[in-house]
Structure formats: C-alpha cells, structure tokens
Length: 171
Image (tube, rainbow, N blue to C red; front, side, top):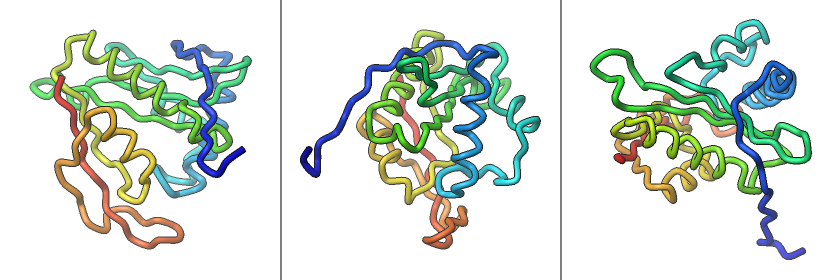
C-alpha cells in the first residue's frame, strides 16, 4: 500500500439509538481526552456527555456505522435560538482508527443535507481548532469558508495556544 493510499469506508448514517451510546461515549471520551480538536472539558463524565451530545428536536444526533461498529458520530441543530435559529451548526467526532477513511466526510455531508432539507439558510461552525488541518480542509472542500480566527483561543497539548476558526457555508 502506497504512502498516499486512502481507504474509504462505506458507512451507514442513521439516527442514534440507545444501543449505540456506549460506542459513541467511547469515541467522545477518546476525542476529549486527546485535547487536540474539541474545546470540551477532558474531565467530562459520561453523565455530562450524554445530554450535551444527544440533541433534541429540532436537532438530531447520528452515528456512522460499518460492520456493526460505530465509527463516528455527529450532532446538529440550530446554531442559536430565536432570531438566529435559521442557521444550523454541527459537531463531528470520529474514532481514531477510522480517521482519514471518509467517515467525517460522510457525517458532514449528511449534516449539510439535513440542514438544507430542513430549511436552514446556512451552517456555522463556532470553534474549529485551526491546527486540525484535516477538518479545516474537509470543511473547505464542502464549501465552508473561514470567516475569522480567534488567536490563541485553544490550548493544544503539544502545540500550545492555537486559534479557533469561525467557519460558514451558505445554502
């Protein structure tokens, strides 16, 4: 296998079920413990994570599954209530051993399709860690642009303080 060979997995995106939660929690825990891509408290417990990740209508939470295993998860909904509720937002997490295989792309495309179909005017990401180049590049490939960056707003474990991007795509 060549250095640049990428394996693209075929995943099924579906609404999360109670049976999916243990695998979703494992992914959330892994991601927040790494402290590299999400500004969530690394000491967050499962009891704290559940209501934070499981969206209620009009939002939704989904999983990306292949061969019976949850490889990633996403949550999406309105970015703000009231007068800001016409703009969607979403968050994505992919298991470490499934990154770079199309799981994040599938989740992001699903979120964009859902938001456009639900009548949102666009999607905004409030805090994309600037050093998370694979995510930034993915979002840009799917039409997002960086509107601005808050310098040194994220404490990365090896890079020190890095910026957080505000990203947006209009439908």
